[in-house]
Image (cartoon, rainbow, N blue to C red):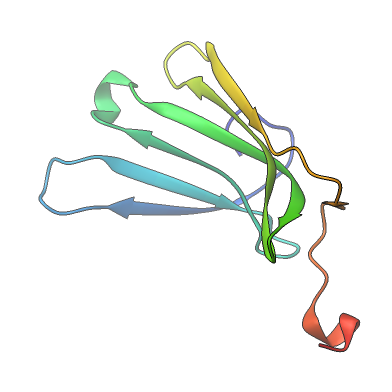
Length: 102
């Protein structure tokens, strides 16, 4: 994954019309959890942003990334971090329905 030490599966998505933003989505190969994404307005210029996702928080029945940190693609300048504040923080692994019996 861009900016990290771990390996990731990468999916490249080109949206219509041709010439619009180019997106890359990164998934953890062990559980296919989304761990980050980035986009370019113009890939040749190296513009756009990369977003890294960490942890999982349960909010209203949803399992969401507990934190999202984003940087510029070009110089990796920190743009910001969003953190979900809740009393229920779940580990970095997704528990399957079979394991919970639901």
